[in-house]
Length: 483
Image (cartoon, rainbow, N blue to C red; front, side, top):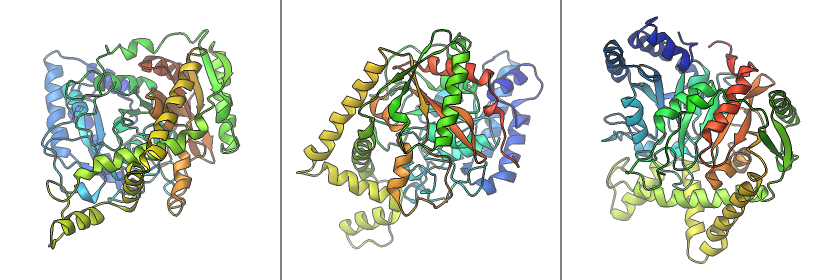
């Protein structure tokens, strides 16, 4: 059962080949048995899962149907879940039980999805390796000595190891697409505003976006269908109709114009990954796509702009964690100032402290214009580059990451080296565009992803291209040894 995709589970439940309760028990036992190797879960919610599974079986017995009804999933541990620890991978929120469900959690629960638990993540979603978590690093199931990517590394590792068919993630600068690439998954970052951020603990509010992580584009379409939609509780949610993502999967790629930016193939890209990306281009050409070289001239400025904007927003968002209202509080503070300083100093890990300090500096008097304002102007230039490109092409294709997964601890002493791993993904967040990573092959036994970007609200187009590619390749069907 653990090898079934979401789509196969939906068909199996509809045909009464097994019940949601049976499937849930199998997967919970598998998590207990195998997750100690991976550390992909922070909290396991056995009682909730079995209650939801029984309810889903009852709903099916009463004639209800739906692709997510009785399907097991997990949530990245920054989606608030009522009465369950929502830690954000941090000591600061280790004792926090959310008093309500995030909109994404509520929507998926209403659709009948079964929550198996909360997955491990980089602390407050800050990281590209899932090594900054208070609960320890997550291991990549393809090689336990390597990182799974971050910050949604727990969700990625759990799905890649077949502990469950799909999970939610969030993407601020590539945190769905990058771990999907490094663990052989399909991961989709929707258009900014397509999925509600209400109840999703914020890192950088103008960049964060929730999305699905699964083995196939078809499964991502199913999960996104349950997640997407307007939410009046979220001021950044966009009131745009949600199409039937499953209906667009089987469209022909004949005549589809795919742009390949020349800037993607610079000296920083592993040549073996470049070869796999070119192979993917040839495969899509066979399916009728038309390939065109394009340019994104301001891409070189993306990393410096992102690492001013994101830490600036983080320093503002994380100011609420002060040891007073909720979360971690230091022992025996001498006065209010001591309470603030020690609660934050003891509650936040080094990477979070580093980004708060960078952000506070960029926003401080005398530096706002020189750094933050300039970064926002560059952000607009990057968006303009994409708008110009999408006048010529329908999809933009390139590598998801410049390198395969690196060894645990290899970049800990050089944070900038880890930041550079986001070079291909952060532009989509700066521009608010939808992006998808799908499996494209292996380098030294480690997975590699190819990234697709589309105009606003064209998630269906991304899923269509990925699904057609997956019908003609088998990279996404490979399973890590031992799982």
